[in-house]
Image 1 (tube, helix red, strand yellow):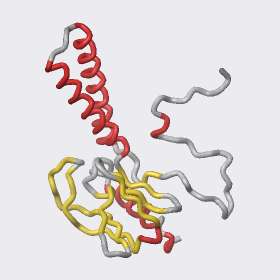
Image 2 (cartoon, one colour; image 1 turned 90 degrees about the vertical axis):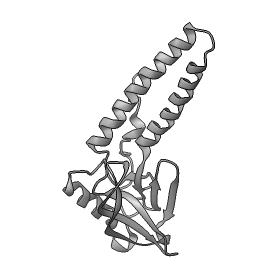
Image 3 (cartoon, helix red, strand yellow; image 1 turned 60 degrees about the vertical axis):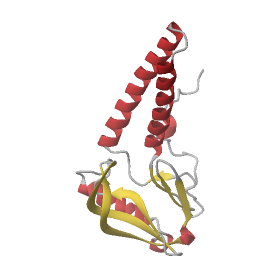
Image 4 (spheres, one colour; image 1 turned 120 degrees about the horizontal axis):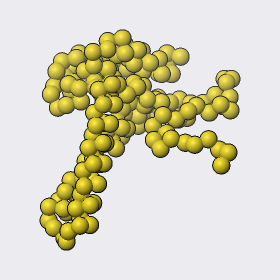
Length: 184
């Protein structure tokens, strides 16, 4: 019992390895999130997680107290669907490491090695407003691939991580641009 206790959700904020090399042979293997989770995303996810726990607990107690009922089954299915969405909400974002860039959306993950990336450009484009499907015009960083695709990232001015914080948007944009191997 002399080992330090690990937090339940510690995988969301991993600590760097203290025994990692600090010379030229250092390789960043773990994916790093380009933008930290902003206050709007944290509040929404914590509230959603809390409501899900309360709702799921109520559904379980209802199912145990009564016989088989259609509303209980439908509620359980809805609760499981919301659980998947909340778990993905914690993971959604743009990640980088020495091997490449990864763009995780709600439904898919696009992983590109740096060799396939032609450049990163910031331009005004339609973006979701605070993660909602309401398009507004805002600055957004996009990855341009060698085969001509343009992949939008989660670095945009109206993001739930960066909204109303222009300095955080600029820092995230610069952090993303500096990960390109040509810029190092």
